[in-house]
Length: 206
Length: 206
Ligand SMILES: [Zn+2]
Ligand SMILES: [Zn+2]
Image 1 (spheres, rainbow over the protein chains, first blue to last red):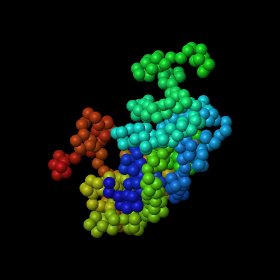
Image 2: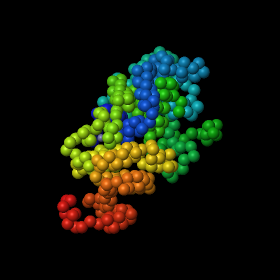
Image 3: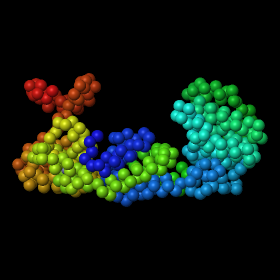
Image 4: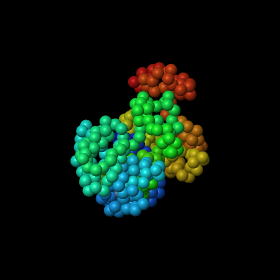
């Protein structure tokens, strides 16, 4: 693309560094900002700057937080012996949105993925093992995505904490509530049959 | 969405003000920035800030420019009597990329669209009429999109400059070069038949 302005070219160039934003989309977004009052760009600019320079990660669970210990970890009403292991903060948000979970979290920051050059040392695994070793965790719930990387990560952590007095569980996979059997993929349907639960228990859940 | 950080929430909120960027996409983009070195966010932030506060619009054609008069208007090799009327800077970039046009431009900044509350006064129409009145323009080429708004805008300008010594033309619409007739829409195909050109002229163009 041949820009008539270096300032515009730079803005498009930086915007197109974002994942999924090509040069054309970046140009569209940047031209939109030019048409809006200057104030809108300044609000975006300072929100991004403030976030990147001031945001913290909770020292206990590594959730994003504005304080040293996040609101969830600091809440005395949460079950502090139950820890749900998730990949990133979006999973925390999704689980919190259900209002069904009262324990704490541990945010790994990703999954073990040799292809992407992500090893255990790049994730918050050591800090999780330390939490378990300290004896504060009674139950660890694995809630990573059920991909090969997720399974590898679960298993790696499982081996690290073997021998410590902690129960481990994994979230149930199966047919979505209200979902039709005929549209489910075979693996999910198969797992939902193998991991069937007593009918009485299903009554309690509804 | 329930964020555990006000700083994060603000960043997502501002990012999702951009057209086509929903809350989920905004969160994905913002979390990406958090994973990258701080320096990447700062480069984006200052590129946007500098563009919005320092970019200029050419005083002659209203193209985006870093100088008072843009490079195209300032280029003595361009045909200064021929002016192509376009909607926005992306059209200038698209036409420049063809290397087929040697005249100047006039960037309206949009199309007349009563539904969106955009009238002639919101666009660079008065300045275009002044250019024509001054006698500097011999040919005006309309290159707006062929929508109702584009046609309305063309016609509005056409009536304003009626009576002045200026030729007007509109870019050719038709089947794309290399395009198959059977896949063309009826309106385009119809127009390309009505506006057929002498065969000899088509030989010169190729
Ligand atoms: Zn926490
Ligand atoms: Zn210009």
